[in-house]
Image (cartoon, rainbow, N blue to C red):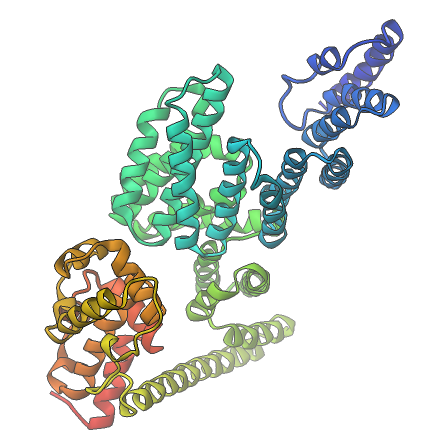
Length: 568
């Protein structure tokens, strides 16, 4: 196969030489016809691309030189050369002094950073440069393409709500544009943009735990892309979303079916990041069904991707807890050590771009404990005598368990004491600061309207209306006799937070005060506490309680009972 490819390449060079000798006056369009329909990374195109570039250089045609470098980046295989041609494209576009071309050049380099090496921060830098040059451009399609890619990076960095707005804007733009009279090629491009924006919307909603919206978007996408070869890839991503919806419902049969149907297209595109997410969920489902071998095979695929690509998404790191646990059950020290090292390596890499969500790894598998376990495992691996291995193993386990327990208890104690200090200083107690205690700030609303709405909010808080389930910004605004826009401005400018955060703090502060002052609530289940303060789901309640108070509700209840000596 390699010889055949080499032959094709040599033959292409020979054909190009004959072609150039035959007619050196060929136009740019004629040259591009030789390769413009080839797929990306098809090296057969490169001889013709180089002819195109040489012709542009010889004629000092800067516009064509930009196109030539862009084509070279598209068809060359080497990643280093792709970046080299991307830089050449930028330089040529700057020399051309065309803002639109400069913007496209920066966007292309950003896509290389994002898709080929998964380096989000440099990708975002390039996208922002692209947007600066595209902002005043008449090419709306390109401008929203830049906005879309900025949204993707923000989403991957965990800024889901900020990314959400980008994708909503893109969806609206592409959808409304499709209502206009467009060329067939434009229709194809705008539909691609629309479907990709729908998919990214679904991804953002997924991470915000709004799976009803994920389901709705997935159904819409599948309806529009089913059995359409031109949109096979987009269909694959919607199938992936549907698989996640079923997984969330614990409908493993349908989840596996959708994931399996989604994989071929995503693998073909070499989107290893999305593949790892699918393998993670397949592994978890097989594990739940006690099909351990199938489960481990999927988790090992994630490790394989990580080893090859030097990239892993934070949620995919979960695979290592399963792999380490399985290795420990079989007393396979070498595997334990290998997967422990991989997990530590993943932690270091994720901290570079995902610093604010890296704490998830610490919560799942404490880094300090991992280092101690690694040292212990290394000592065990060097021992040859069976008795010594057993003794060291037992000692290591005892130390690790003790350290984990000590660290866990110490951490909870600090969290509890910190929260109690806040409660005792009336930050969350009966005299807690409420919305209406904040001095009225200078706002874009009129003073009269601001005072009126603040007074209504005071009543809203004092009557505990915020403990009702299902409240939305629109419903609260209606209750207060205003609209969502005014309410949003009021809360943002007077409280320094958005509506969602405002409601969360009211509810969590309320239930925290009850737990601190009324011991009967210490016997409530987490579900009952969530119900009491108006939060629909246990998971959301626990997450918000931890985010606002810095301690998990079950840990706070345990420590509170210990402090007051309360038992049943």
